[in-house]
Length: 474
Image 1 (cartoon, rainbow, N blue to C red):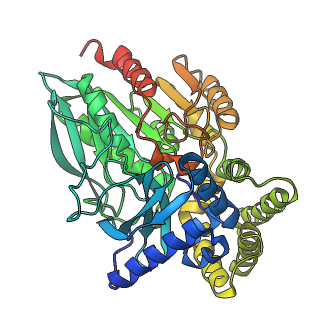
Image 2 (image 1 turned 60 degrees about the horizontal axis):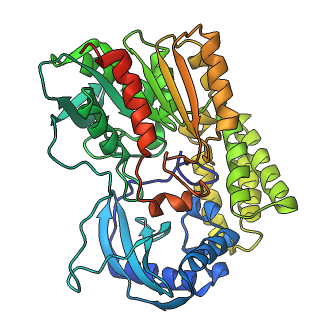
Image 3 (image 1 turned 30 degrees about the vertical axis):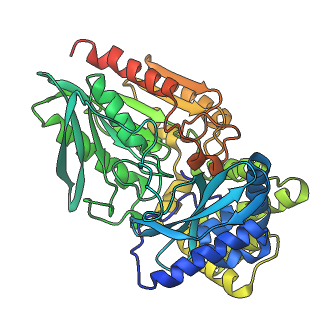
């Protein structure tokens, strides 16, 4: 689950269309309006998901935080196109503050709407200064005590492409399949310049564990359409990966497990509850309550972090509850659309143009009435957890605003106890956000600004847990 308040997923793989000059102008105009503090002029630029996540009060908080940390704005430079990734155009606008120079990173989708706004260390435009090397401090670097192989396997008509890391040595090795969170992700689960699944693969392969990381449906080398699929179908994809690994001569078929983050932390135990071929499960910020309960709490936490409280917060939560109840009860589209309209108006404090309102309502209504969202709202992960009797490690970040540990960790613990699972470990690690980075507030706006991809303590805990049980005799 990523960073949007309402729909929980960001569309990350729309095709790039013509009109890049116009998009450059859009990105530049948006960045300047933001830095000028013209908050009420921003909503028409935003896509539906970001509009819900960043109404004017949130935009104000983000800008004021930047100024508080870096000093007054001295100048805004020329916007330039950095690259295109999975259908998104990524722009940089240099901003000179009193004490630092940073880049605003404005992400535009295929329709020319702003789908993301982050800030990062300044990077000169190629051709003007020497370009800094890409990457984060934890990105894997040689020498590698393992080899990597591009692989492909199927789940019925769906073809799934990925990368298999195999440790040096004779084997057979234990293995783990990595399962991403909601929304279309590539095999590295790339987000905000971080590649967490590449980091996981490197760390575990160095510890003697084979690792398979895979493009989600409809991304990279994988076929299918993630938007029309559900968590249940992702569990079937995961089991197809388990069976692929078990058939490899380098892999011990009795020691193949699953590691899932966020929605992947729901997929993993669901898959394990349906197959005896899964040897262990690692849940990273996986939920322990139904999706509707997760959303209610998520909305409250993110809104409070954005400075919303009192009657405005109550109105926002009430509007969300009306919408979710309408979707859960299978109400007709007109009823859902009406509830969605009320929520969007409330999220924007009533300050939204009618044409923008209509667009957002239609787009968001399509999302909340999708197969994925309906399944997510109603699915109770505890039913699957009560059937999982293989070793389970469930970790939560103490500052996670998207999957709150206080709401979810006890439910995971209770469900595994009811399963009679005598090897279940549930831990909350202080100071970590939803991505398991060391964070100040846990808000999503920090994700891209933090150099750390995964906190080393988390890497250590998971690695030692798997090796102790499944690789010590490898």
